Image (cartoon, rainbow, N blue to C red):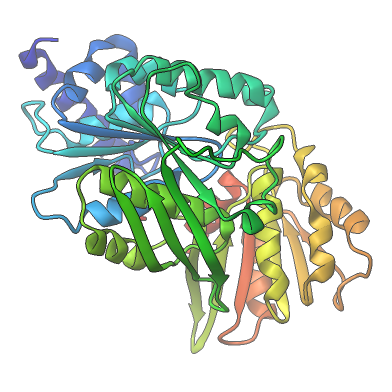
Length: 438
């Protein structure tokens, strides 16, 4: 595309974004990119070609957290000018919207690195244009059957995307048998991120754990400890271009599954030339991405109540987050389940999620909310051996559930909220947080 043609396109996108925000009808994270991509499809390539280094992060779970971890690290490196689709808009229109937003009036991007979260089915559509230096794949779980179909299809989509980028270094979850085989038969240099076997065996992968072979370089986490404040400590050792030894690592994201995200962020940072101490500091100081372990506080008068959000969207994410709650004393839990398009219309995944893990938790009370609150309450009826001390409450409007939970909790207490994607967005909006605030 001629550079001059980008000028009116960028002007249109910026004007549309301004109108959307002014009218309260959106933040411009998708519509500008959708319209520009539809009528000027070469605009994406013209903008992408200006970025020296591109990293693409895909997979079922953990894309946003991995991106946030890596971005926190790179932001500490002098001279790095970074772009990221920080609103979680990971379809092609969301990525293009962010590029248009970040470009100047002449259609020029003043960035050195783009760290892009890419939705699984979007990767093969734009991989040839992006030509990323690094592709990271977090995991492959069955997710949104009405959107993707079975997991075999998702695996093929990601492999097709990688195949279009023969120069890309690939960083994969080395325990997930599906991600570990993605580059079999391809020429991409591949690094495998793993947990020590005693930890990895608890992860609900489909199929037997991949056992890393001696010729397969990568990083392994061991000595993993989840602290009472839900921070996670662990040690890292392994080999990338050289031996890696990091005996003391801490991340603010809770759980074994977030250790994979941290391993990927560390590996990618080192592949991009970041020093060990900078990588560790970035990991320790990053703030969890929206809905992924973040803590929001509601205050009325002198009373404060804290809400910790743990996004759930498939059986794996639900089950693993429930595992974290087993050690929480006097657990106060809000389950917010929607079935909007972004959540997946098929909520049968609730029955594949291991709600039975709550039998090992010290439950104070549970509140079900969202469009499918009643479905959630029925699932709990069959999961719990003993009802909690307080009857399970069902309030479909999330606004009412937020008000009831606040009134029920004592000052200073923390309520754990496990929402689906659109329920999380609504909850954050009610708390005064919008999608653009990360």
